[in-house]
Length: 404
Image 1 (cartoon, rainbow, N blue to C red):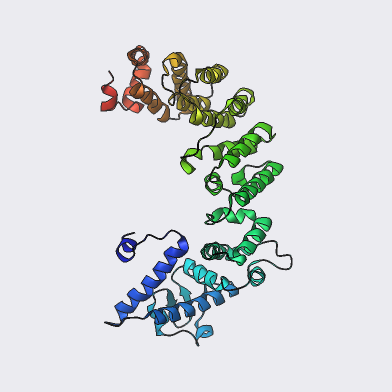
Image 2: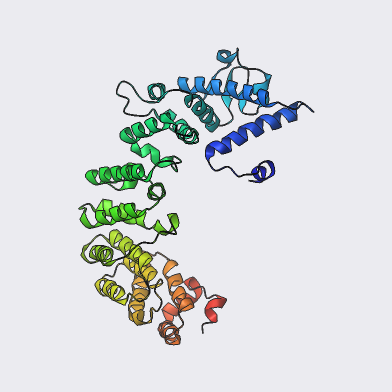
């Protein structure tokens, strides 16, 4: 970052811009280092880059990250040594990092037609699957092509890849892909996982990457709630709830209408599902969208979960209650949760710190003296519990002490 700030007026926005900058800097700086007081011209830089592009492309076509030096005897010269990007010895040459080889290969591809690109990067004869060694190069290629105005090759390549291997696009810089295409890709991936009845991560997808790719637009959110309501696959519902937890992070300006129907969908999962993980995720999801004053929803959830003694569910409910303005009326429920956490810790020899922090958070953010007094009374009346919280888990901070 320091180098960017010192040598450029604008911070790079894409990884191609980053590599453009690093390549130019490497050529200039190494030339200065090895050849004193010689100013390298733009023409010389372009000549070196063109040779590097050819070398990288030859390596990529051969499926190698290093090749015998004799193959390059006609184009390797002292300038290439001094660029700092290519390591050359008596027997072989290779790039300083594979990303440079992929970057230069992508530049070469960007000058070819769509048909030529397809011929190179897809397996023959059906051209259904991208060769794994070309995937990172394809990522660079997409960034290069999106920088070109009205690139027909970009549009052809995007349509072809999204039809054959849409999952590949999740990893790319996709700011130039329209919302309609993103929605179609997102929908295709989810429905494929639903048909196979597998978690999305089992299909090789990261939930955060999917959320980021979709940008959590209105259309995506409505689609996800529809899947929660209608899908028979708990595995898909788990994936959907995991994606929904990133709404505020990915799109903080997004205003979600948490209406009667969406509440009903989440509450139905909480009420009617025996899958502990799924219920816990639904509770956390609803807590992200709950508004102050919606006591009917809170009461409904607490009453339906009161008989659940599982510590994971209670942990999710603690997270939920920490989000509401006045948890005073749920003090008895919180007391029950303390007992459940302690029983779990003792029976499993699992020393868990998280719930003690939850309880401290209740005390720190709650203005009700009676609430603080009741929780402290609970601790004082139980010597074993008091010792546990005071010395082993309950880290009494200065802020906490000010509430006393």
